[in-house]
Length: 337
Ligand code: PBG
Image (cartoon, rainbow, N blue to C red; front, top):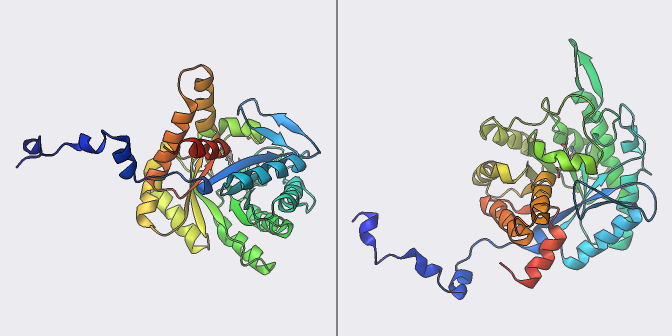
């Protein structure tokens, strides 16, 4: 019998009439504990500076960031992801290596305030270099670009600084070749062999990072990041290669970023590695465009955010890094969708 011929015996709407039946057969569930809250930390005390491009988010001094970490714990979030917005920038991003820098300060404050809340640190140099690229530059045949191998050395040092301050999980985001291996080696040599690495493995050169670059003051001062971040127009197999290499170098968890326009990549990674913890970064542009439209009254922020996060989960992500982490905790407590 052809599928049409099965009507009216088969009526898929039967599973949709009653809310109780819909609830019973639902398969994708958002959980508060899978949400990671990104925080922007700048030096000082009692500083709370609005981020115009990301309504509802602020640059916070370490003391106030620690309050947010405590709040994340109260809400039952999976953890926080720290980004540093340092005062001093230079060509090498040296500030990133200081044991008393803004991120080590924030980690210590967080651990004092809420020792059990997972603290993840973003590991990169773009917030620390005066040119805004993700590592020191070099010239090669008339071209200025990020020096991959010099950056690896510095990333290893930065990772150890974070681990010494008490970071629970290190998340390198610079898309340098060999970064996971170099960081693993440096951490192990410094006695941190039990600190896991969450690699931003498949990170695309995306215009969706626009609002973040204002938040973190990390926009490249010339050119773009296309010589290290991935080209959106390459087929998903390249993302699989990136992930395969990161796993071979010792990544404990991997990430696809951005999330929404890259659900196919999330899906493929999940299929290929059913057991590897997979994070998806619901990035600043995905957040801010909904915020802007909601402010106009054009769409419902809560429904859109939950639908987006559900779709990212359905595609196969386990861990959701999202600027809606706190709201999601409240929304799920109000009325689980
Ligand atoms: C740093 C970094 C970026 C983001 C996370 N880590 C910016 C970039 O690569 O330019 C973007 C996050 C977001 O847009 O929310 N390398």
